Length: 347
Ligand code: PHE
Image 1 (tube, rainbow, N blue to C red):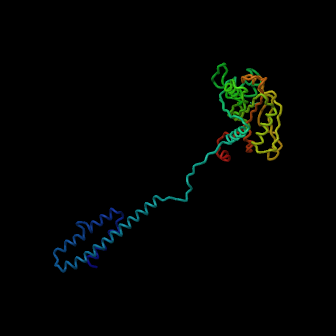
Image 2: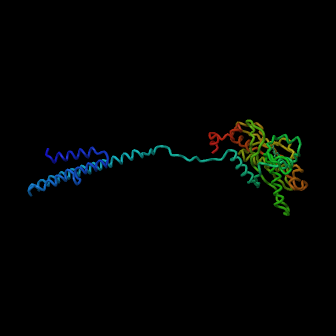
Image 3: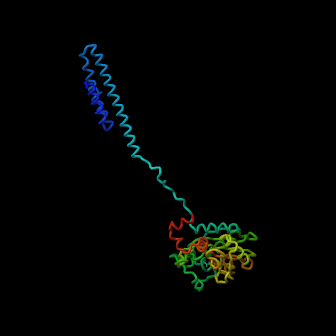
């Protein structure tokens, strides 16, 4: 091997050893740089004859091209290796499942409320909302339930630490019935001087509270009040409206209803509303879904109306109860535990 071949082999070996582009540039300088080995060889030609210069020059050029070719090949190899390393580091597993954004859903009791509102709206009822912290007058007295009357103990009420104008503490409303008087009073005011006054036809769904807790009672629960007052509204209309509602709500035309005589201070006569499915797991059982009755004359007076000209009916239904019956849920507490395994079934 002559001197030039040895030099080429040593350059190739040096380039092969360079592990990084910077190493490679250092190695290049040793051969092709200003004082590199090839440059030294060129300088050494000065002392040669013209003929010798020709053949030596050609040989050095071949060497130089060989070294440059080796350099280019190594540069490409290093760049390729760097690219591969980068690709490996930034590897993306496209088969991994994506991060999903959960689609929310309404709570089953909210679904029931929406359904109730739709059905009653189709029968011409307004939908009203009222306060959950009520005065004693609205929750009890206006509903013909005077202070110290024993019927008050039908509801174990939560009281708030603030007294109303009457010196009696505010309460967390134990039913939605205060909305009967609130809404009717506002209606009378709104249509003052309008004759005849439009009928009051309203439902008022919302949260209610009682000191009660077991599988079928919760301290916070949901009711929907209904009120229809006019000059000629009778118990027959109550039966039609409630029957139509229940059959639509449960999508069951042969659903049987029973108005079982009962007592509420604010209605006379009063009735519990019981329903009976003719098929399915609950078939044949009578199930209570609410209370109802003809609005008591004293309550009509408290609304600012004359019971001689205005008559009507009211009802209050348990929205949690309706939800349990519709979906076959048997523990009311599941509605309030926030367990996604339960709730996501209603999406
Ligand atoms: N407020 C009564 C209850 O909570 C239900 C009811 C409403 C009864 C309207 C009659 C009329 O039990």
